[in-house]
Length: 279
Ligand code: C2E
Ligand code: CA
Ligand code: CA
Ligand code: CA
Image 1 (cartoon, rainbow, N blue to C red):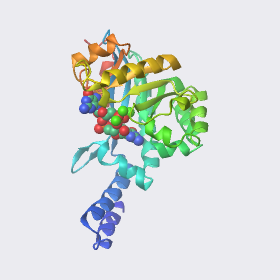
Image 2: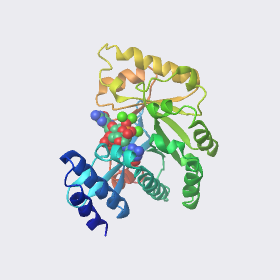
Image 3: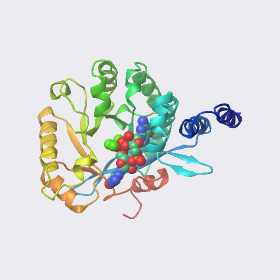
């Protein structure tokens, strides 16, 4: 079983240093977690900062380990990317988001667009758009229900190789958001060539907004850039009312952050969509 092979890996590599050994163990455990469907998708609301209205959500993966409890993605996504496990992991995330989107379209609920994160390496896979399209259609969903978040860094590292994949996704009608924007050294000349729909301002720029910090200039520039290129813009990591107020006053009304809500378990998020539920 997968359980025994995890032990075998650990024993076989007895001579490796602790770091390497625990890495291998983690890899085997993650492989088993994917097989056993221990991954969950949590949803963090995206909100119109002026009205407080729910406008969407970001799906964020969590690993519910039977022994260790809930493990955040920062602890296993980098390893998944190094080992190739990111492919089955993302497939499972896509299955989860399609299943959950179907639930969101139940009578009595007001569904919103949901985004998921796609790792850099997968953008090289020309089959990705078709696979996503298949999943959506077999779940009876529209491409308009889904958005993909791709980090600016990933895009800039693969300017030429990913253009075909992104264009195919865009033609299908799936929205594309450039995540962690402002941290990836975009060549502005290239940005206009990519079929993206949205810039997502990285939370590192949001932290000091409203205090006269230099980051205010950066955020103003990103908002102007988005407007000039005809893109939507959203800010993430908003924790204070000061940050939210500053962003609204400076043309960025779409917000995501702990000020509004932490990521929620699926069922708690579904309740937010319930038109009959008390606010
Ligand atoms: P990200 O895509 O930049 O996601 C935003 C992260 O910021 C999330 O952490 C979220 O919980 C956190 N966050 C949200 N609001 C606030 C806030 O107001 N303050 C602070 N300090 N943090 C906030 P999380 O869920 O731990 O995810 C970390 C990263 O893991 C994500 O960063 C994303 O790069 C990656 N990730 C998550 N789910 C997936 C997935 O399904 N696939 C892939 N490939 N990567 C994923
Ligand atoms: Ca993201
Ligand atoms: Ca981000
Ligand atoms: Ca980030």
